[in-house]
Length: 111
Image (cartoon, rainbow, N blue to C red):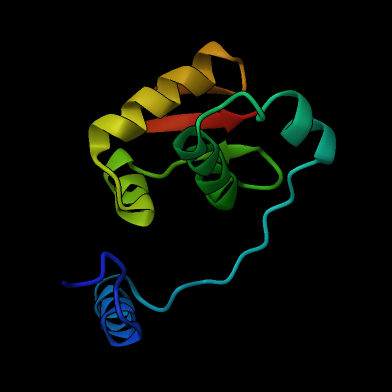
């Protein structure tokens, strides 16, 4: 019986493939205030929290805008694009983010 988890060799190969396609991964720290986590993010599903954190990774610190594509977020989190769209709608409905169209891209303002 095979394990549902990837082996370390598979993970390292995946990382090498991503780096070849997208360039070296940048290391980021994301700060989420404790009050935000406990008061506003605690009732979200784990995937919705991950989408919020992924947006925080792409957020411009000065403007608080983020421009990742839905496909990129889906690849980052290893989920389907429909799952990302549902999570974004939940975050918008809870006023944790807002979304605007900027030409062909979505612009997310992370609150």
